[in-house]
Image 1 (cartoon, rainbow, N blue to C red):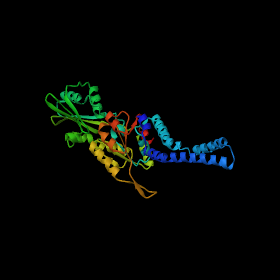
Image 2: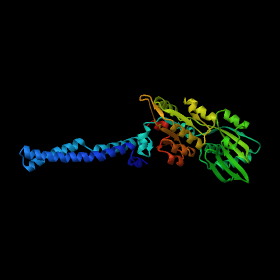
Image 3: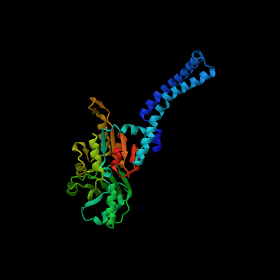
Image 4: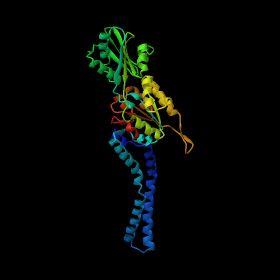
Length: 360
């Protein structure tokens, strides 16, 4: 990816190449004219021999060529790209293309996902509630359903169940539904686990109890009947607050769009002093894409010139459900330890588990 960035051309390089395509022939023509004129001056005016006049003329011609130095125009931008890409790589930031380096300096909006981006993505189960008297049989089915899923929520629930000594039972045809959850079958029963909106259990008292505490609700249903609710919590990245603060100081508008529940999202954004008008929760991948499109559709104002310019929107995420938004944004930034799908959709990859790369 580093090599691709070095070999790709930013827009400014295209301008430089066009200028050079006209400038170089002009300089060569002036050099030849200088050579001819000084040979004539040497022979006709200074009464020099042809050889002596030619030597002096060549000196003047080379001087014209060196002073004009058309090579610098073509080499300046590639050198900047190589140096900038190398410095960024040392700081754990990989640019996939040179145009990204050129565009990033005009950033007007930075949009963050929550889980795994602003937070560390290492969730733990804080609350668990079981409905009915089938706990002993339902938990093995839940573990069999989510045990192989790599989503942070599923990983946390899997670790929690295994710590309690639960053994997974066989589940047929487990299928992940991006932005919703996972479903499968066991012993002829339909199993689903995911967010409360998808499972239509948001109004259930057990789910409301978990949501009221600001936790992320993970629900499990058997044949469309709620069997268990888990409340999960996560912690902010150590550098999240300082990164958001510096972005505000630079005049960059900061936003958060997340598929998580309202309480969990607003708990994080309140700590980071992000206004509620710039926060969206319970977002599907399509909702995230639409939010990015709305930001791109509104020109940003330049107060000094009283003009407007096209906004540059950076989206930073790590999950498969962020891939569409990463591709939609002007610049997509993939967080360390995210999914391969998200990485392929991004323009920049952060190699270190730190948000400081956003500021690079």
